[in-house]
Every structure is written in C-alpha cells, then in structure tokens.
Image (cartoon, rainbow, N blue to C red):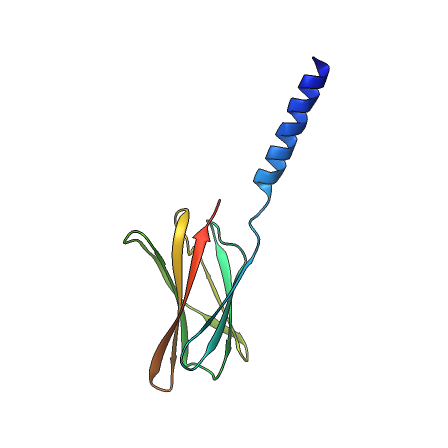
Length: 125
C-alpha cells in the first residue's frame, strides 16, 4: 500500500511540475516585398506577452502588431510597436484572449508603402 501511495504522490508531483512550466518562446520569420521580419514572442500563451520584432531591409515609419483568431471573427488588440534599437521594435499586449489558433500581423509602413508580414501561432495554456 505504501508503494502505491508513493507512486501516486510521485505522479502528482510530475503532473504539477509540468503544468507549472511556462510555454517556451516562439521565433518566427516572414518575408514581405521589402522587409525580412523576425518575430519573437516570449510565449504563445494567455496573459501579457512581449513581441520583439527585428526588421531587415530598411527602416519603416510605423510598425504595428495586430492579432486575430484564425477560425472565428475575433480580433485581438492592435498595438503600435516601440522602437528599441536600430532594427528592433517591441510590442506589449495580451495578444491572445483565448486558446487556439491566432494570426499575428506585423504591419509595416515605410516610404508610402504598406506591407504585412503574417505569422500563425497557436496559443496554449
């Protein structure tokens, strides 16, 4: 009986430990006509997130990050990214309001041209 109880206790510790681990960061890349866009999310999960956007190919005037659900008409926030370095921008928001498949768009405006880099992300617990 003690062995069974010890085994159950160990299984509960393993389950609790895996449930408490944060989802890993997500790194994605896309190419528009003028830009190479690298999007790094601290995690693809609910709650406040940080998106770091690195842009090669020129310096856009505006960088905006917008999210929306893929399978239902549910928009998330649209955030103006702040410039943090020469080719790096940052956006902070709760991009995902529920679990499931989301689309993140990095909208770039530069030299009178609008371009969009699209990234598909699955929000997990």
